[in-house]
Length: 309
Image (cartoon, rainbow, N blue to C red; front, side, top):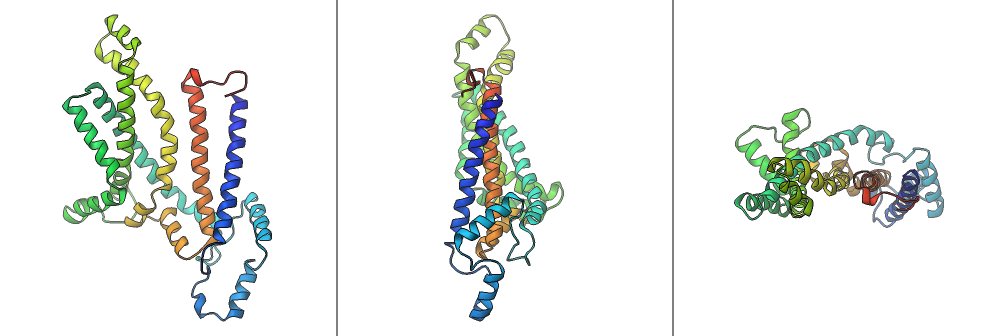
């Protein structure tokens, strides 16, 4: 198991290095400059600024310097925010985005599992059709459309929740729900499929033949086994939700890194774009590592034998 984790960690580091390199090179293809009101600067002033930030150096020199600084925890200073360290900015804002994503994952996963169980148990019945319709709606409607609908009814029309901002439960409810509906739909569809498959297995028939109650068969045998594949999709979904809340954060004016990421792209804030992209990439890559480890822990058939996967 230790050898397996070390091997996967090595793959993770190589993947992250490739992402870092591609992100750096992509910045060099962006049109324009990262300096505010660059059109009002003289060519000499613009050249002075580029020299100060090292943008006039050859690209290989800039690349080596950036990688070296990154290894030492320095992602550079933001051009948009007075050379404020990108690491400080991300540490200040990321907890808000993380909290929003975790809230959405908890709500969405719990609701999705419950809907999937109900649909799987009542296959072909009205409850199954109802759960399936909820899942289809959740997958089909984009989160930003749901966010606008929720804002209109619950904030403007009924005035139950604030329109925008960030704070306690009242501020978090609507953006959490807007993100959670998509998670609910995906988990529900996955859970229903697994429940239908598990309920048709021979060991379920054997358990019923032994006289076990329907509730015991479903919750002790069927649900526990159907949950194994569902558990493994939760980590990458969590990373996707945390990194995919850009539009939601802008709609609800949430001071997370998602909204700032959009602004940094508009203003060509190279250090901020690269730092945020690498943070997102790291989250997703780590989530895949967690999935690999979970497979080994929850499914004996997938465990490492002889040090090989």
